[in-house]
Structure formats: structure tokens, C-alpha cells
Image (cartoon, rainbow, N blue to C red; front, side, top):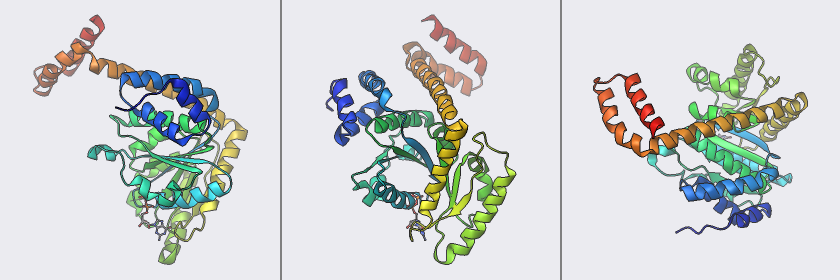
Length: 328
Ligand code: GDP
């Protein structure tokens, strides 16, 4: 059995920046056991005043776009400049295999050995919201442990970005050149969310295509309405393999942060995110309670079948369940 410590052991250890304690606290936060949840909340509440001081950046792009290679190069660059960087990875597809992402630690092997960087894959969860809610709490723990830059890496498959957008200050999208109009079309929604965009693998025979893609993307962006942040992104090209353009991408991230801190959007966005997470937490807590309720567990299978077979109308079945829940 995993050993639990009193809350102050986690709190003090994290404040000291003790990685072992941080990892244990993350495991606690990720746990689904009710006893762990209560302790985790105690730890998080005690650490709240030490959180919120980092820059939170979401990094996304389709598998193979070069996220981990990019982050590895960027990570060393940032730590050399005195930053402490935590990278949290979310891969919703890993839910299908039922485990956390095995490859991730080795994916950023040299960065994982960097004493100023911390890489942590997100656990699998029942829902995307659940995964990112835990990621948010993990992010807060990392902030309290003194990491001033938090990167949340996600696979650009569409749904995860929306949840991650609610976690971060700045959203960085990595794109491939020549991925075709159809793909860029799919990406429109994500492109609209992005604050910084870069075309990866701009090296060797790819260079011209990357420049062309950059121009096309920049053009497409000008057709979008001005985002609430008041910032129009500039598209860059980069090569992680040749270590070119990576610092330019980060310069864009910093420029975005500065711009939005000055115009007030940065603080406003965080306040709105806090509200969002309150409602998200309420929604999920209520749903969990509902589905775990003995009365619902007893009624649900039959009503589900009745609905599936068309014997009972959906609203009627829902009403029965809700009434049953409300009366007990
Ligand atoms: P991820 O799935 O988005 O994390 O992508 P990876 O970082 O694992 O990279 C996918 C593949 O692209 C790997 O084979 C990398 O070696 C390659 N790759 C990554 N960055 C570059 C780059 O800047 N230039 C080139 N030519 N290949 C790259």
C-alpha cells in the first residue's frame, strides 16, 4: 500500500522544491480514493498562496509534428536561461490502452535528466474534463514547488485543446508544412485558439514548403476576427533538429504574455478560468455522486435497456432516475 503522509509533510516538501515529495503529492492528487481526495484538497488549499506565479503555456500539434523534439530543445534553452520548467503531457488516446503514456519519459530523455526540468504524463481519466481537472491541480502543485514555466502538452486531435485552453495563458500550435488544405481546414478551430503558431521541421528539403505554409497560415489568420486577447499571432518557422527558430517561437510567447499583461486580458482570462473550473468541478462532482448513488446504480441498467429497445422514452427514463435520486 502506498504510504500517505500528513498534509504538512507534502506542503513543506513542495515549498522546499523537493521533487520526491512533489511526485508523491501528484500521485495523491491523481488518486480516485475518497480518503486521498480529502487529503489532496487540504494540501492544495494550503499551497494556494504559492500558486499562480508561473507562465502557463499549452503546446499542441498532431502526433509526429515534432512536439517532444521541440520541447526538448526549448526546455534546455529555457533552463539555461535560469527558468525552472515543468512539462505535463495529456494524451487522451492513451485511455484506450488503459495506461498512462509509457513512452513519454523516454520521449524527452535528455530533458528528463535536466535538474531544472520536470516531466510528468497525465493520468488516464474517465473524461477529458477529468483529465484536465487533475492536470490543473498538478500544475498548481508544480507552481508551488517553484516551477516558473508550466507547459501542458496535448495531442492535437481536436477535443483536448478546448479543455487545455482553460488551463493556460498562452496556446502554442505546432503545424506541419504540406499537411494539405483538408488538414488545415480541420485545424481552423484550433488555429483560432492559438496565440503563437510555428511550422516545424523547416530544414533540408522541407524549407521552402515550410516558408510557403507560414505565408499561407499568416494570410489565413488575418481573415479571422481579432481575438479577445487583442493579439494577432505571427507565424514563424522552426527546426528542432537544427535548433533554429526555437528561441523565436519563445520570443513570441513572451511577447504575447507581455502584451496581454499590459492590456489586462491575462488577469481577466485567469479569473474566467477560475470560474470555469469551479463550475466544471461542480458538474463532475454532481455527476460522480449521481452515478455512484445506490438507487441510481440499481435502476439504471433496466432503464438503459428500456430506452435502447424503445420501450421507454428518453425524457421519461431520465425523469424517473432524477426523481429517484432527489427522493433519497
Ligand atoms: P510528436 O509526436 O509531436 O512529439 O513528434 P516527435 O517530436 O516525436 O517527432 C516526430 C518525428 O519527427 C521524429 O522522427 C523526429 O525525429 C522528427 N522531427 C522532430 N523535429 C524535427 C525537425 O525539426 N526536423 C526534422 N526534419 N524532423 C524532426
